[in-house]
Length: 339
Image: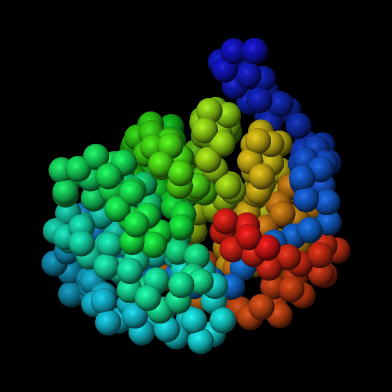
């Protein structure tokens, strides 16, 4: 079947299916892959900077370079945060920042090295595709060179951030200056070719249509068929925060998107619904609609929190209880799914 016909059939299926049919099919995919296991992680975020040139309409976190609240962390501050999270028991660090062509590439390398020096056991998930393409522009080097340099410094994986929604008309409304959907996919393809496994995300619940969701998922599915480099898909509900864009905020819609994603992306091993974005009670529902991973503690996450996501201080026991209450067996892991 050609991709156009497959895309059309997937869209018609989504449009005409009820939530119970979607849920049953998604749960079958989930059970076939993971039986009664559900995954969680002890992780933390180090947000090295809120200074960003893009100032996307959807973002509540970024500040312009000259804004009084903009910052770039010193390497000593990075080290202190990594040490603090290590003492809390985190086994994974997510490095988050913005797009700033004024930052020297060596800074990004040194951030990874600094965290790696705190703990050789840390799983370091760092820098979105947009950031890595920016690093290529700053250095004048190829994207392959950027990835390999970051790997040598201690990088373990790339996050899936910046995907938003691939369709250009929707993307032009929510994040007009960010890396295009086509270029995001190309950057992840290069990462996979360099031996870096990555996540994939989709930000939904803003201006997107069901057809644009289908386009996003089918684009990810096609790349996964080609490279096999994606680990997990992470659907992220848009939160309005300080944005002028309205959020749909519908639990029914969230549930349908989760189930539909699991069905379409049956060539992805994992579907993650971060408890910090969906709440503990709701992820218990989503675990029966295709999800198998509730994310992690996400200590010190700032970007989603600024938009209104609920970031109460979570403990490992909180995550375990959430999974057990939904009838699954908790499995501690990291973003590379090392149990």
